[in-house]
Image: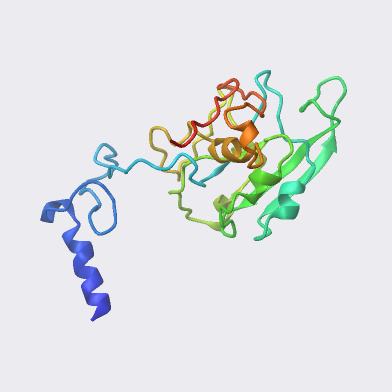
Length: 211
């Protein structure tokens, strides 16, 4: 009986049967559409600024990559979904400001639990998470994101893969969690900037203090 009741709830959510367009618990619903029509997609509720979604690898304002290939993110990952290998920078054409850079960087999203421990462990704020969490794959190969897919573009924005459902604002606060926790919980650092600038954003402002 439980399965049947759940099916009825799903049917009632459909727009043709009076369902609402905002996808919340037992209220949303898929919009009836034909072919490749994308204008009728579900409306989504606003997401928390610190939501843990799809990762990005950030760059400095001069375009250099922040990742130094230290592998701390891979070491702290409880799901063992991150694979990193560092390599020495070319002195004539360095990829990062340090001696080494992330030559290989892969995240297996079939394993990732979005715990954000990789963000906490990163010493250069290279890896952060966006607010995108709705992405699906038609094969296992697409679920393993490579460095080429994770590094932000020349505007500092996350790259959009064909299977990702990006919505406005989901790429705006890719450092929200890092900016909230970088002071280490010390009240003396509230409102103080303790992080580097990012390509496309500059130095992000600190989060507002709770009232």
